Length: 597
Image 1 (cartoon, rainbow, N blue to C red):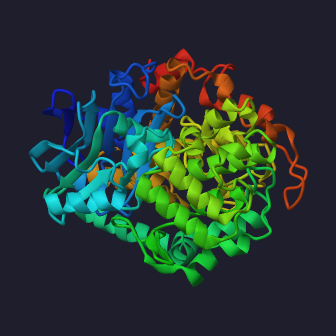
Image 2: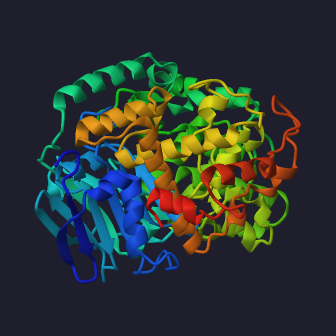
Image 3: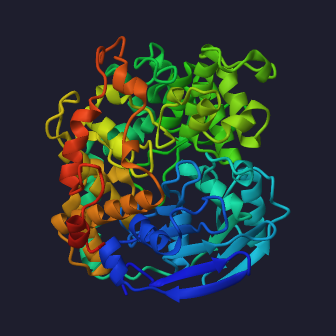
């Protein structure tokens, strides 16, 4: 058995029972692992119409066949569940070291069922699995709780947990690991909190069996060389982290500013990756087996820790009109400590700022705090209020869509399927906008990163305003991303590697027979399975859209001036390429071809 251990752990939190199950490895052949396998389990075991925060929902931690192996970036895991933020399938990806540790404990996945009667945590040390009391940890922030768990379980233990935001069921709550790594999006931390589960602590001592170790060694050497020689993965990301994008995106006139009211920020240089490296960087902070090392560890005043990433810099920076990078680092720190998704939190604060600007939120609701665009201290204080659900922060804790809807103006929420859009204005990147609209987990940039060809010229430069051929590019990128997520690798490897490279790595580890073509077919299968879950959950194809502002209001200034997103021209071609009906539903023929009928 290569790449997989063929075992998954089922934990019923109510009954406090633990069962080790064998699973059919033919599922690995069809769905690879990670995101694909997790969605398959979710589809089989959870009613798509179940309340996401009810005991009927399940929380699935799942590794890929390449997790815990010597493959470049082979340390990632996924958290799969029904999202309390969107109602769609949630599948949040995290790096660090926890995922590899779970794999070397001998498990491909953990399926968490029902709800504990009181706070608990799970301790896993190879075959020894215990459900322990966590009442002494409930209410503690991430660093304090992690250190306490390391003291109880040994310093080599790897800790995955929620912060106070997850305990308080914020729909923006993240699952944190290794102090500052996050399975951040879609509110997976709230599902963990709804089950009264504070943490999962893992210590593993096993080795993942490899089918062809000599061939894998040669492939790893060749792929690492490609990553080192690539301009993005070998130079930009290692030197400046993901925030290297700030100036690039701004220069193209697609850096959303003041809640997407503008697309150019005249103070972008002050929050750039270059400024971060010059003024605040302490050291690089790489994940398991990562030759890229894009992670940052920064310090400002008496606060230090992992991050911030580009999306975080944008969310608390230009989207809130803030040019104080020190304040952004502090807001990021509090997201890590409280267990919050930085993208959704920053974007929700930006939406609240526009609600205040337009008179919907009144001064009396602010309790003396500012909600004006450009106020650096505001992003820090409102992040804390959101995490602890205090005052107006209680309303904000469930995301910008519910907040704006509460005030009667849901159109001021820059979301797709109720999840906040990330840091690229789709009016100036037409393919990326199509990807936003069709993402199976709502507003998301990492379900098909069209910024690669439309801005970064990888694997080739596309005209970012052109429509022709974009639907096909989006489909290919979405399918390939599903494969990468399912294998347990980092999306950033795709700047230098292609479908054939991933197929070769998979085959060397598992003994599989994938080609570049068939591995993309596996990605197509995973994408369609997610679509089926969403349709059964009541997510309508009409929700494959963008905020009204981005479809109707032209960018007023900057390099993308005059553009809106032309989704109505792109979506029909996308549906046709997917093999879906004109209404956006997978056809019976398509499902038959993928073995999903």
